[in-house]
Length: 200
Ligand code: GDP
Ligand code: FE
Ligand code: FE
Image (cartoon, rainbow, N blue to C red; front, top):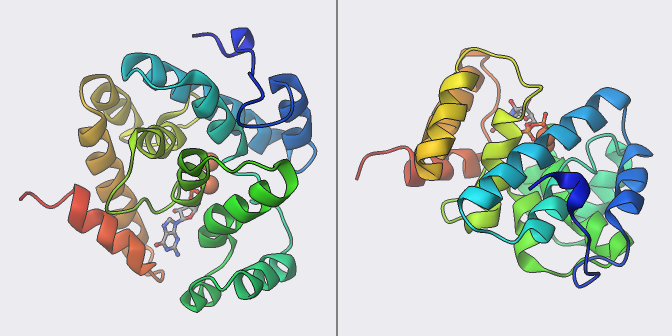
């Protein structure tokens, strides 16, 4: 499915794909916008392969990093006013932009579909249980065509044979990378590792 051919039904968001692209481009740098369009492309390929709704996948992909360049102060206020996990306050935008993004998107675009919102909410650290749309956005964010890092080709190949193996691979790689950097690990990332990487 070529992204340009998707026509939104307005069931999930009250605008066209072109209008959504415009709204997204206004809140981020050109480089990040290119990444977002790459995530949509990768996600739509996975949607075709795993037989998932193109429109929902397109919306989730285009909005997944919507909050990445929002101000920290505004993000903190949302974490508090929405009664989110206060542990979040010990982290920063890297961890916030998923869960806070889901709230902003509900408020600004009136998106209420839980599969779309959960895919955005969980795209950075994953979750122990993820539905197909969450899985697709999580993997597409890692393998989109503009990504260049060691292992990305292997992740792309895995995604063609098994979405679950691609999730396990990218989760382990990201966790190893973060441990090497001695940064604080968000506990949910460990839960994702336990659920998707550890052999049962
Ligand atoms: P992006 O938004 O497209 O750049 O990608 P992600 O949303 O997947 O990740 C955003 C950033 O958060 C990346 O730099 C990750 O390495 C980082 N990140 C992911 N999990 C954790 C974590 O548990 N702790 C910390 N400190 N950073 C994390
Ligand atoms: Fe992100
Ligand atoms: Fe991203």
